[in-house]
Image 1: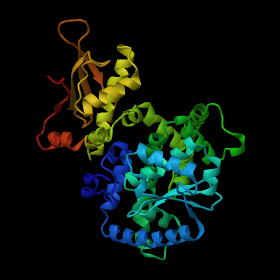
Image 2 (image 1 turned 180 degrees about the vertical axis):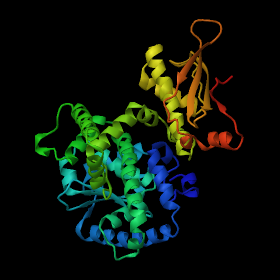
Image 3 (image 1 turned 90 degrees about the horizontal axis):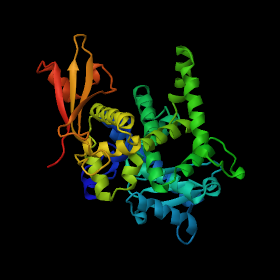
Image 4 (image 1 turned 30 degrees about the vertical axis):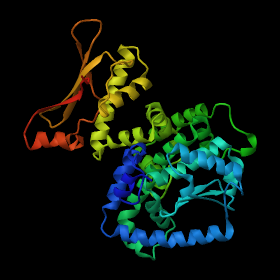
Length: 417
């Protein structure tokens, strides 16, 4: 663990310094809300201590430690996954438990422990196991361990404990956070295994794909087709039916459905976030994380600007959207220069946010391009972001409300000299 991570703990646990670069934005947002609830950290400490004692006793009595001597091939995968995620495998314990389900979990904040079931180790290839182990290590990186203990505690329905006193208000919040935390951990899993097909096969096995059948030739295509059907089925329901459908699963579920997890990871990969972190050194990952602000709305607007410019570059400049997303994030969010890249013709970008008479906000980006001429050519791009003023980042809302300005201009990109 880095020095920064020790000195700047997340609200629930001590994650790594580059965790914000990995986390789903709603994971960060909900985790902060949970951490701000009075007395909850103390109650969670009690819950974690109680569960840790039970789990450690169970592992010591019924499980076995996976080491170089006991199960060398699985431990080699574990070491490689730790290395890919900037972790020291020697600081962790890796256990197997005799369970008939395909499952794994992380426990212990002082001495982190990854636990895999016997069946998981039997049905997963090395690449698939790397994804699962990376997923579990992702929970440690993002500081999820304590809050996950509370989620498990609430989901077990132990209403006779102090958790019952919090259940009405806290349970939906904790369960919603738990599902988003799984999306963050899946990102770590992909970074650990570096194989989207392997990650996709894990989702299929979680959904019930028979292990004795091997695996389909193109698991990503199978899941993509099914995710499209799933989205259409949800969209085709009437309002009441859809609410009942979502509430029945989502109110008490700690994990998203397998198809939802695939779709979220595919979107993250498609936006180029995976490539950015996979190619980065530990120091570069920390720098990326430092540019992820705590203002969720600003993060959302920043990404909307980047995606709007990437769409423009694909349609009008003939550039790869995925590569443009990666370059634009580095330039617009991290301050890197586009000079010498595929988007070097972009020389200046300014965002204008205008408040209309009805209180709605309009976001427009002025993009200045060198198109074989001496002076830059201006292109005006509409940014696909909500018009509701309440969803404008705090700094923009402050200028509208306190300074009574009707238009706010923000310099998004200017090349370094």
